[in-house]
Amino acid sequence: MALILLALALAPGLAIILFIYWKDTHEKEPVGLLVRSFLFGVLSVFVTLAISLIIDLFIEIDEQSLSEQAVHAFLIVALVEEFSKFIFVRGLLYRNPNFNEPFDGIVYAVMVSMGFATFENLLYVYSGGLTTALTRMFTAVPAHASFAVLMGYYLGKAKFEHRGHAFAWYALGAATLFHGAYDYFLFIHFVPGIWMGAIVSLGVGLVLSRKAIKIHQVASPFRPGGPPPIDKINENT
Image (cartoon, rainbow, N blue to C red):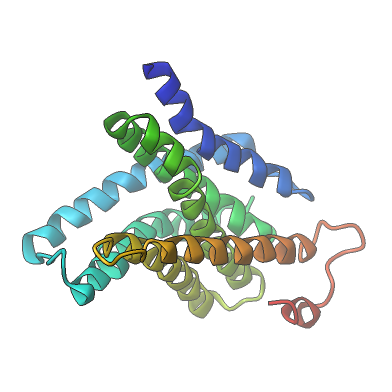
């Protein structure tokens, strides 16, 4: 049973990694750097834990309060987790010479996020069992991927449209917004049926992620014939 749980915990993250690698159609990234990015994601879990431990010393959340759960979802969980991933993508991978096309923002953000999500998934699955493994396979792990695609989309625009500071903050903000919305509807589970909001926010995030992937595929300088003008690409954003 332990091996089955291990396989189920690893499978969604690995499937998403392979999907994004396959979508990187014009100029694939070095496998060694992708592995390092995944390990940065694992490390980001410990950054999150360290920040969260400090926050917990000063802030206590009423689990039955809608407003306090909003603070919990958007700031204490979403912002902290996405910031912990962001510092590795923006602080380290963004500067790497292999980050040489807009789609690479998505690639590296997803690799870091899947490192985070896979490690987190192992912890949840081994404590929650088979039901948790199957539930998270189709919810939490794809959700982390969608947050990462949105982050990477804006980082790709930041680097190659020379809008670094503004779009870097958009990257963190978009990931935090969708992460917070997803978590919030789950945190206020005491409201009957409200959990459906998490499914809706996940669906919207996945649709936007699919669009972001297509836009950056088209924007690749390695695309045969070259990318269309930036203003033409921006018509689709």
